[in-house]
Length: 505
Ligand SMILES: [Zn+2]
Image (cartoon, rainbow, N blue to C red; front, top):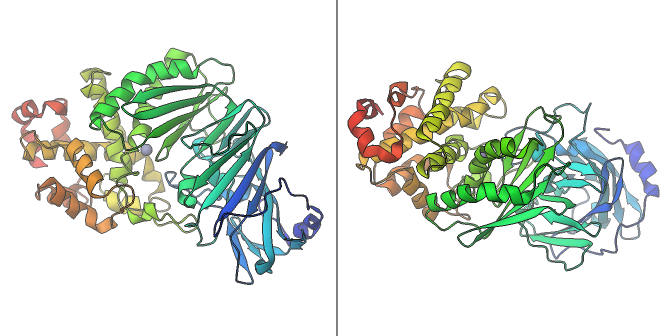
C-alpha cells in the first residue's frame, strides 16, 4: 500500500469517471477537487487538473516534509489508486519513483489526475506516525481535517504556480479555516492561492459547525472546534481566550499583521493519538490543535499555553523568516539555522505576555522558567551551538528538537535582558521584533547568515552581535547564574540593580 506498482496502473485504466465536471485548471496553474461526499474506508477522492506539460515525462509529488514539523513524514504514503488520464479518458502509464513521486509517461497528453487519500489519524501499521496536527482525519459524515498538503500535490519544482481548491461537502458542514470561501453554494467551497506555499499554510476542518469569534483590534479570530461528545464548546473557549488574545494584541503593539486568524481544534476521546503526542502546529493565519476531550476548566488552562505560543507565530515565521522558509522545498528541504528565533522567542513571548498582563502570577512564571532550565540541562546537549543544531534538526540533532522550547526560550529571555540592560530598560525584544518585522515583513526573507548582523544594526546596539557569537553560534552555555533570584524582566531597572550576573551575558 505504500507504493503502487505498474500492475495497479493497468488495472486502474478501468477507472474513468470524473468526479465533477471541472474541465480545466486556472491558466498556468492547478485546480484540485476534494470530494467529501465520495468517501469509502476512510479514503477521500481527489481529482486534479494541472498546468500543461511540454516534456514527455513529469513528476507529480506530495510533500516529504512540511514547514513547522521538522520531521520527514512522506505524505505520499497515504495515497492509493493513483491514475493519470488524457483528455479522452485514456489512462496514461506511470511509475512510482519513491513514496512521494509518480512519474507520468506521455505527459504532454495529461489532462487529469485522480487518487484517493487515506487518513493519517488511524494509519496503524504504516510506521512513522504523523503528529496529528500535521495529519489528516477522515471520519465519514463526522469530521474531516484537511491539512491541504496531505491531499494536494504539485509537479516537481512547480510549487510557485496558482491553485484553486474546491471542496465538495454535505449541507450543514462548515469549513473552519482562515480562508475566505469564494463559492456561495452550500455544498461546494472554493479557495484560491497564489502558490503551493499558501495552500499548504492554510488548513481547513470540516464538521457540523461549532464556531465562535473574538475581535482583537481589527482582526477577526475564529475558533472552530470539534468536540465529539460536545464536552467543550467554541463559545466557552472564545470566552477563555478573549483575555489572552487582547493581551497578545497589546503585546504586539495593538495592530496585528493578519486580518483573520483561525484556531482549528480537534478533540479526541482518547488520551492521545497514533503519534502519542498532543499539541498544535502553527501556520501564518491559523493553528491546528489535537488535544484530549477533558472537562472544560481542565482543558482551558492547558489550551491557553498552547494557544499563546501558536498565536505568536503570526510574528515569526510570518513576518520574520529566512529564504529556507519563504521558498520551502517540500521534497528536499534545507533547514534554517534560526530555530532559536522561530520557536525559542515564540515560546518566550507566550509566557512573557501572560505575566506582563497578569494572566499568571510571578510565581507561576518563575515555575515555568525553572522547568525550562531543568529540562534543558538534564536532557539536552548544552554545548552544541543552536545554529548547528537547527540546521541539522532532521537528522544528526533530531533528538535535540524539544530543546527549542526550553533553551530556545531561555535564549529569547537572555536576549531580552541583554538588550534591556544595554538600553537602560528602553529597548527589549518586543521592540526588536517590531523593528525586524517592519524591516523584513511577509515578502522579504533574510539570508540565514545576515540575521545576527541585521539585529545589531536595527536595534542600534552593535554589542548584541557578541551575544549571538557566544551563546547561539558558539558553544558557550548560558550562565544559569543569571536566572538565580530572577526578577520578572519587565521590571528591568530593578533587575539591573539586583542582578549583577547580567553583566556576564
Ligand atoms: Zn511553535
